[in-house]
Image (tube, helix red, strand yellow):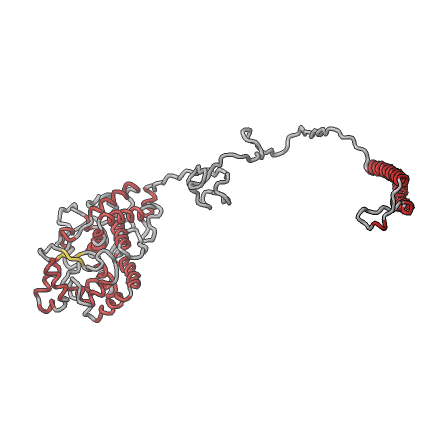
Amino acid sequence: MAAMARIFPGVFLICIILPLLASAFKDHLPEVQLANESDKNDVPIHINNVAQLSEMGEKIIKALKKKAKEQHDLDHDLIEESQPEEEAAPVTPTPVPVDPTPTPNPVPVDPTTTPNPVPGNQTPTNVPEGYPGATRAPVTIGYGGAPLTPNPSDPQTQVPVQPAPQQDLPTPEEIKEHRKRDGLQMGFYDETCPNAEKIIKEGMIRAFGNDSSIAAPIPRLLLHDCFVNGCDASLFLDQTPSGARVEKLANSNGRTVRGFDLIDEIKAELEAECPDIVSCTDLLVYLSRDAFVVSGVPHYDVPGGRRDGMESLEANVLGNLPLPDFTVDMLIDLFKKKGLNEEDLVVLIGAHSIGVAHCFSFLYRLDNPQKAALVDPRLAGVMKFTCTSPMSTLAFDTTTQYKMDSIYYKQLAGKRGLLESDVLLNEDPRTRDYIQKFGEDENGWFNKLGKAMNKLASIQVLTGDQGQIRKQCRAVN
């Protein structure tokens, strides 16, 4: 309140008294005219009037300066009274009392590390390959605890690298228990030889890259093996304990079958990966599927669990394999004995979309006028030109020799098939519709092919403890 009492008279003096004082001197100031005004209005300026004017101006200025100084001092006093005086003093940190009693369940501290370190301009670590400052290989987010960071170049928490566990080979007891499972199963080797199908597939891809003609003989090996006493890899045997002639020496096989070297190569890889696990029979079944796949057929699943036979006799071949001059009745009867129907028959002969036929298997048709009537004249000319010997070969489908497609069915409908037995299927009402259907619906045929091949590969199989797992496909253990 005292401060307010001092302020009020000062304000009153400035706002009221000084304006009145200025107005009081107004009437005593002399009139001064500028030189550029009219001469008739000129008024002489006397020296005494000027001196008086200057003296009065100086008095007014001194009075104003005095009042301004007094007002400044008054404001300074008011400011000092409104703020309490504080004396700056150095701040001394208050020591924190330490409790000598240990805290229950103390958290262990690593003496080599500093708690809560402040990140500085450090070299990024654990940065995926391909980014600036890369120090490690790329990490797939979600595997191994890899952190998700907005910037791959930012420092990341090091994820401990877990060494890949070594593959534990199954014990003899586990193998024996696994073999007791009756029947065929998808993923049969997932536990005992997880890489089996991969090894077989890579073997086919490698071989096909070197020789595109290797795909066609493999499925033919499967049919020739399964139709003779079931799928047991008996066709691979070079000899048996009895010393009798083996299946591969029969006229229906002999020099017209091949692919045994590829079988041996892949079998050696399987034995190195998981000894005494994968049978030669399963190897042939998986390899046949992969031969079709590299030739354009969509992948289809194949069950495993077959075991190898220990007998191979040439005498068993006669009457169990289809021949080029078979009638439709003979083909249907033979396939039905193996558990296959008319549709399966037509589906499987579509495998002739790839591969070749030897001249001795079709050139005879031109010597019989009735049989020659079912040969397109242009094809007959190609036959005569190509077949310089009985063992010369001609592609079943000269348009797409190494590609599985439905063109072969269209060729059969136009009498451009090499084998007489294939052409007759288009003449019989029991099978003609299938040929026309698959010629128009390639995807439908692909779908049927996988199912028919699995039926073929299930004929009289050995499973469980039957037969054996050969160490080499050409000889029994």
